[in-house]
Amino acid sequence: MADARTIADHLARLLNQAVADAVADGDLPDVAFPEIALERPKDPTHGDFASTLPLRVSRTAMKPPLEIAEIIARHIPADPAINPPSAAKPGFVNFALSDSFIREQIDAIVESGGAFANLTIGAGKKAQVEFVSANPTGPLHVGNGRGAAIGDTLASILAAAGYDVDREYYVNDAGTQAGAFSATLYARYEQLAGRDVEL
Image (cartoon, rainbow, N blue to C red; front, side, top):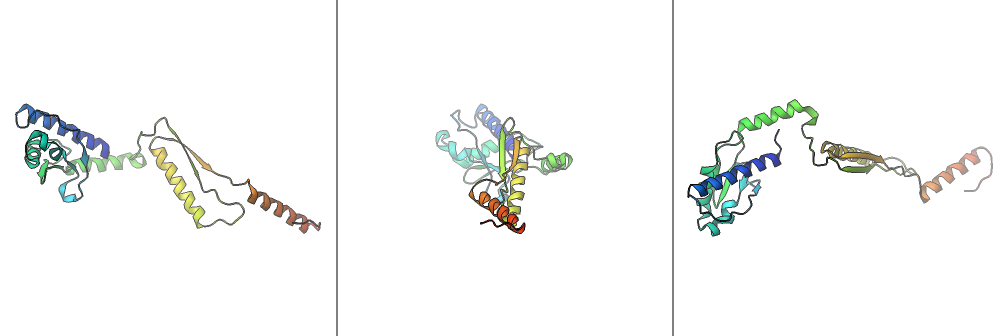
């Protein structure tokens, strides 16, 4: 399965190849092209990814950005992951993922089950998630439950990203509050046993 980074890297390679081919064919001048960056279009009708490369190189290439976008789009080779790319004003190259590619990704997600989103960005790294930390001197409340759910979810996400995760429930049994609470319990126990103990 391809994640967004992988497909973006693939599209960047296609763009680089298209630029090299356009320069080799004499359709674009042999100038220094900036590093290719892809972004998500604000309007989903413009596709899944867009490149502003034509806008960024138009002054150096001494051509209108839309013309550069059209040249680059023409030189992008056919690829099963995308529909034919399009040029759009003022100088974007837009990419739409093909239906067959999306179906393949859905099939891969279903086949991989719960492990479909596992990554390796945290491989070899450790993370500690400390959560809940309920106050032992007071009642549990909804916030403690929320903290448990959020903490465990965050730890699971980190583990799926490859981190070696240490989940820690902080036992808040030290400090002034816990000391006063234990002294009060002891005094009440002694009083119930008939002994006169001051709080």
